[in-house]
Amino acid sequence: MKATLKVNGRTTTIDVEPRKTLLDALRDDLGLVGSHAGCEHGVCGACTVLLDGDPVRSCLIFAVQADGYEITTIEGLAPAPGELSVVQDAFCETHGLQCGYCTPGMILTGHALLQRNPDPSRDDIVDAISGNICRCTGYGQIVEAIEFAADRLRKANAPRDLTGSDANQPHVDPAAATDAPQQGVLEAAEADTPHGGRS
Image (cartoon, rainbow, N blue to C red; front, side, top):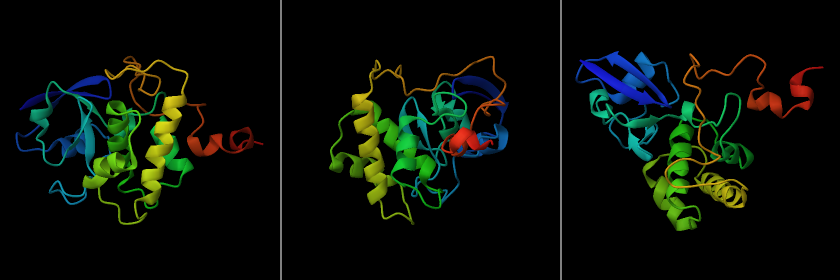
């Protein structure tokens, strides 16, 4: 069965079995492995992606059901190759991750919350991430990361609206063949070292 998926600003038609989940289609057919297979019962949130801006469990949706929706995975959240979104950077700054397995789902859930509510209370954040299980951090640093990102976004001198056109949204080059960083673009870890890790 054919499914036309618009993922991270690119439209791709794939041939899938009707029973294939969106998670499996993203990982196996499109090579986007940032969405993780955890419980595969919709409980843990490791497979969270955004469907028209709302967080959903990609293990509970068939790929053919996502036809026609805007799908955003963790790979599509960064504004440009080699850069981090405000929420991704906030998770790094506050050490809101440890093993990293839940991190893509947590970041996408936090991003969706901040698109709806630019000034969430601590309770709003806790409620938003309550469907995402983390076994490492104790959640305190994750909540702190989303608070930090909210503060940065409020102070950003950039236009912002709830339809998705803001400085923190990905800017996809439809002519590019891949989401992979371009040669010569520093990875986040290199950017933190003097001279980009070069001598």
